[in-house]
Image 1 (cartoon, one colour):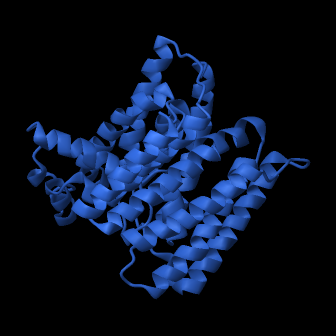
Image 2 (cartoon, rainbow, N blue to C red; image 1 turned 135 degrees about the horizontal axis):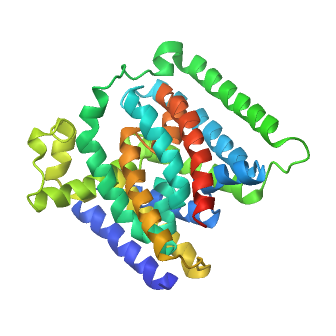
Length: 357
């Protein structure tokens, strides 16, 4: 699509949201467009950064991600300490988290995208990610429907570093752990490596600003997975295939309310639509080129996309919801998620190579 008609469509949708939904949702749409443009324009791929670190000992992508985490934490933790109405992305340490994070890290390499990566690459017109998107949504929904059973295997209450250590202590610990992560990366890659690249740096800065705006406007951190699951849940309810009143997750008051509202009231849906539009804007100038896939690769990729969605719900988020939003808002579960997902990625990178992706 050309940029002019795309801009006209976004403008028309913005006006519709202002008049029919809310000004907040309309502004969040623009935040999402910015996110999509930043992700696609910088090719800021969480999946790619981890894979390049493992396969090529290239630390530039992970350096950009650590910079993003540091900047987002510097903004989010003080804001959460100052304004009690803002919510942190807290998830319970649990068996569900351990299993989900590992599976997510593994399958995001096979599917070549996490939650945000699937969105922006679908917006760029990458065929596999376009095919994965509905299966990711279905997997996320089924994961939410089964979540209560997973949590019975073992969990503890969510742990907020801010509540335990105060805002200053939580921020100091977060920045210290991020510095230690950089030291670990240095030990992994060795000397003589290039650490910084312009696209990763401006992408990190742009996404940190936009994630902070999302927190202030939505009252909650940036997320992707919930919106996917909501789309599939609403379709399942409309088809009479799912009764939310007998499900532990979807019978919760907030989730039950969202099932009765227009999907445009959901903040994660609005930003995700914006991400698609922002990526489409970038693709209008620089179309994405993808290698053709065999039938076997398509089948494996689509199955991985479904597992990606299912595991993201078990893990209480993806690289955005669990890692970025979890860590930047002081949730212990974000720090548990990262090493488990990275371990899964090390397996996924090898599987990806086996099947010729």
